Image (cartoon, rainbow, N blue to C red):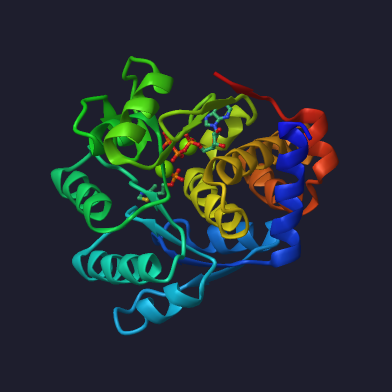
Length: 269
Ligand code: ATP
Ligand code: TZP
Ligand code: MG
Ligand code: MG
C-alpha cells in the first residue's frame, strides 16, 4: 500500500465515520468552518460555555481550539474542554492564531500547550516560532517575511513541545520530530480567503478523529485539503476569491481517493 493509497483510505474513513468535531474557534471563521467540515463529511459543533464544554469535548471525535478572537472566558473554556478531552482520549488540535502578534496571544498559546496535551499544533511559521519563543516576523494573523527553514523549525518545535507540528504556507510541513513530510498541494488563492488556515485546523481534527496514527491523519488532511483547493482553483474558483470560497466547499464535498492518488504531492524529507 502506498502512502497516497493510505491517504485516500483515510479520506474515505472520514466520510464513513462522519466524526463529531467540537470547535472552540474565532468569530471570523465560525460559519465557514462549520460548512467546510460538513462539506468534507464531518459533523461540526461549536460550543463555548464553560458549563458545557467538558461534556461536549468528551463525546466528540476531536476537539479543536483556536485563539483567533480570544478572551478570558473563552480561554477558560478551552482549558476545561482540553482537560476533558485529555481525560477521555479525544485528540486535541490547536491553532495558535496570531501568536507573536501580541504578548497576550503568545502567553495564552503557551499556557494551552502547557496545560493541555495537544495532538497537533498547526500554524504559519511565525506563529509556531513564537509558541516556542523563537522570533519570526508576524503581522496580525498573517505570517510575515521571516526567514529560516520551515522544516527545521517544525522539527525543533515538535521536539520541544513533544507533539506533532504542522507549518503551512506555500508548502506544508508535518513532523513528529522523527518523521517529516512535505506537502506541495494547495493554491495561492487560499491566502485571499479568510479562515482557510482555521478551517484546515478543524479538518485536521476530523482526520484525527478517525485515524489514530497522527502523522497519517495529518498528512491525509493536508493532501486532501490542498488537492481540493487545486481542483477549485482550476475550475469555477478561478474567477476570484468569492467564487473560490464557494467552489472550495464544493470540492471538499467531491474530492475522492482517486483525486488524492492522481494529484497528491507528498514526500518524506
Ligand atoms: P496565514 O495567516 O499566514 O495566511 P493561515 O493560518 O491562513 O496562515 P496558511 O498558511 O495560509 O494558514 O494555510 C492555509 C492553506 O493555504 C494551507 O492548505 C496551505 O497549504 C495553503 N497555502 C497558503 N499559502 C499558499 C501558497 N502560497 N500556495 C499554495 N498554497 C498555499
Ligand atoms: N482575525 C482574527 S482571527 C482571523 C482574523 C482575520 C481569521 C484568521 O483566519 P486564517 O485561517 O488564519 O486566515
Ligand atoms: Mg492563509
Ligand atoms: Mg491562521
